[in-house]
Image 1 (tube, rainbow, N blue to C red):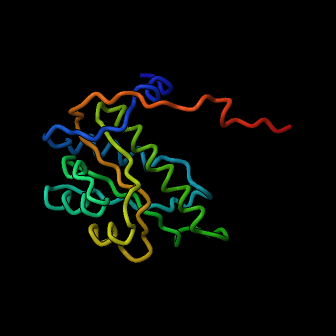
Image 2 (tube, helix red, strand yellow; image 1 turned 180 degrees about the horizontal axis):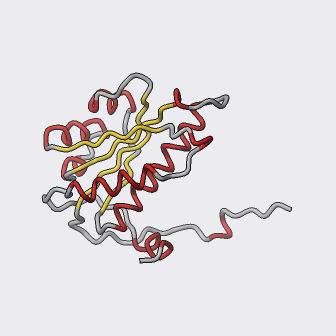
Length: 168
């Protein structure tokens, strides 16, 4: 599948089949993250792979009780790691790096026939407690991953002219 086609076909999935995601596919997603471009090549992100019904239930509780999060067989929690940055304002660069990593993980999952959903509705400290994040690792996103048990509809998108500004 071509990349632009993948962009148009991927959707945020919130219902998952119960079967686990094979480790081979998880490894491919993590390898995709490893290759992403980063600010200054600092690679200022950390990824926690979360599995198991009890831990997934804890993730759901940390996401303002989005119960569907617990249905997913797997989640990645992508954290910023500003200590890796050597530019002024390291939090800014770490946010960029972690955002790129999350986006690529989302697209890699779709390319492998998996559904995923970027979850940003959580209190970072609560999520950090669930995953036992090391000091300085701040959760930016939670990405649920699994085999889709739904066919989500496309959501409306703004016209390009609404957000593009030409500057000469």
